[in-house]
Amino acid sequence: MSSSDIEHLNVRDLQTLPDEGPVVMLNFMRFREYSLGGNGTGWAAYLRYSALAVKLIKGVGGTIIWAAKAEAIALGGADRHHWDYAALVRYPSCAAFLSMMEPSGYAAANIERNNGCADHLIIATPELFGNFNAA
Image 1: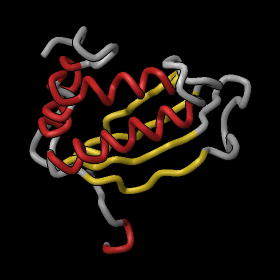
Image 2: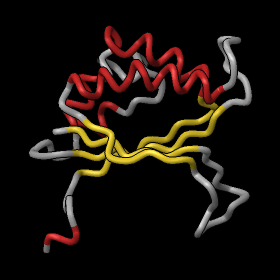
Image 3: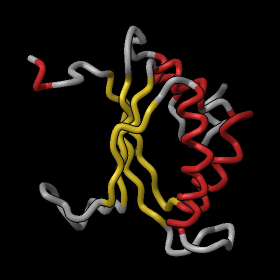
Image 4: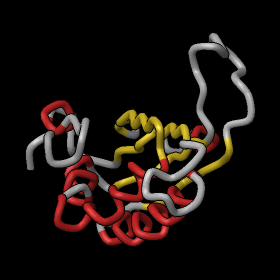
């Protein structure tokens, strides 16, 4: 897969991460007012994306750890950072995430993601500590 298959997917950078264990993808989304597909709001398009993406995530052994509406900027310039929604998605490995992103399986979901999201940032975070309370 090349980075042009899914717009802005940084395959080369992801392949440099250690792949010995879980990776958590920190997602930030900003929604369009209206879906580019003309079918409701950006949020509605994102919900259609989510219904497709959850199956793909589970198919590679991943799970959604947490997702919520972004209510306020607690630290940082509120004028520079605007996100509507955030989510943490855990994959068993970076390779599992990349396999989920294969265009043949992800293409239909990606249409709805593009229709709904004005911006979508994903930060890859190799899992170092899964439970701080277990120390």
